[in-house]
Length: 248
Image 1 (cartoon, helix red, strand yellow):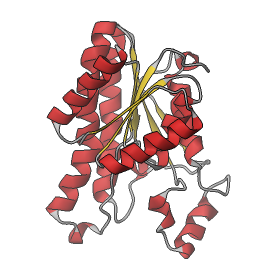
Image 2 (cartoon, rainbow, N blue to C red):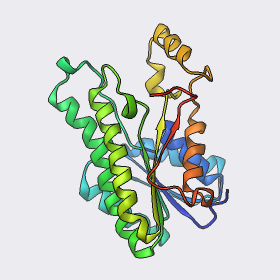
Image 3 (cartoon, rainbow, N blue to C red):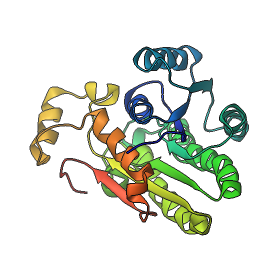
């Protein structure tokens, strides 16, 4: 799969899955725009990617996806820099885990604002560009807990379930302009988030995964590359579960 001449935007790209997705697109010839909320983190990510791909074209900026103004400014800057926008990966996300009866309103709002509202705002800004181009590809990051729920993650699960509804609605609205919209629902992935899990809980989860391992970030990145490629040209409005066989 070759993305020469394509421009891919990845939110929450300073580490983990977002960084791996940026790496995957760069490795296939794409120009990449990255955003995160910390200037130092996004600069470090850009520097690391340039070390691996010295001739790569990378645009990096700070943007809070929960703020409409930030999303509009970021997408405008990307288009000004590259001249177009082909792919948007809404990866930015946070957790504020606790049981429902202990969950503060701020914990609920923070997660929904970044994970769900952020995908809506960034998609809205990008769709304006893609509609004029009459082409584009949007990939939203959901989760297996958006399909099944998870104790202690009412806010996160709700945000990721909302991503599925958002994806399917956007796919229907934008298809007539040759814009495809899909979601990825990862299972348990080796990231900073899962590193904090207790060992006995990790073992319990692993026992339920038929492939008997957590996903690598590259597994999720490969799914994003596939959905953005011409090989997936007739796929829209779908949720691709990348879970090692773990079912909802």
